[in-house]
Amino acid sequence: MRDLLDFYTNAPLLELGAEADAVRERLHPHQTVTYIVDRNINYTNVCVADCGFCAFYRRPKHGEGWTLSYEQIGAKIDEAKQLGAVQILMQGGHNPYIPFEWYLELLKYIKKYHTIHIHGFSPSEIDFFAKVFRMDARDVIREFMKAGLDSVPGGGGEILVQRVRDLVAKKKAGADRWLEIMEIAHQEGMKTSVTMMYGIGETLAERIEHLERVRELQARTHGFTAFICWPLQPENTPTMSKQPKTNAVDYLRTTALARIVLDNVPNLQASWVTMGGKIGQVALRFGCNDFGSLMIEENVVSAANTTHRMTIAEMERLIVDAGFTPARRRQDYSIIQPAHAAA
Image 1 (cartoon, rainbow, N blue to C red):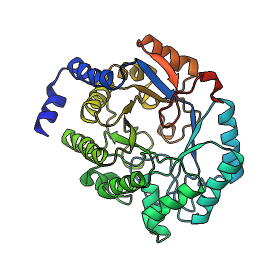
Image 2: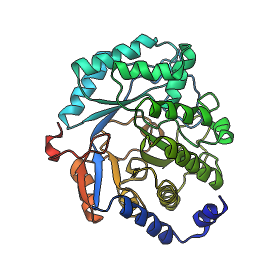
Image 3: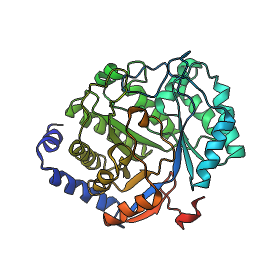
């Protein structure tokens, strides 16, 4: 821990970047940077988790609360497919008024009428379902897989240190539970991504602890396909609006350290959605081999007044200008050839 902390704190920025770039080069020697065309569909904004950093959710009975119908979700999928989407990222609030069957029927409905890869239901949602429906988390995952769930996103990870989670998201799955549910998903044959949202009151040592816990789980299961980190967007949030925004240097240092520590997680995504296109581009020389998603729709970060938009042409130009070859991918990082056939 001390060596990593010293390196993170004291190494010159470009030295950190060069070491991370060397790890990327070793894992991805062909100089290809991938991206995916998908749509983020939030099926409900009603939530009882009361996370201090979230500007998106509404409490039950709030006049601005909503849950989408199957038809509304289907329409969003069809729109996305017209733009070349190969996946939906489906997450929502912890809504106690939605029955378990609603989720199963939704998955079946999507697979029947709007066939697409469903990357959905973060570990904190799965933990919530297990509690509300009095089920074992493994059974929740198995039922979802049978109904059509393809992979699990790494949302709700924040910082996987309980002290920090108690400060900002006390009602959500704890650090151990979050990792436990990911391990169950991996045991059931499900691939998942993993995330870190920093700048929420953690120490640098706790950021490193988060990375080391992810590395340890990956060593056992090899179930993580990708790691994504981004800073807190504090505007409009219930309790963190006065938290200072971290800067681009902090993002690049954290990203580089993640690539160095997580050399057993194959892919690292740049977070242009929170940092903007230029810093996303620089991250490609700080360990990232993936430019993430086109993000046809994004609601959570934009609720905190951070709104970056991009076209496929812009994304590919940024990748080319950084010295790489762009390639569209699927969730499992297989390449779609040719890219324009993705729809």
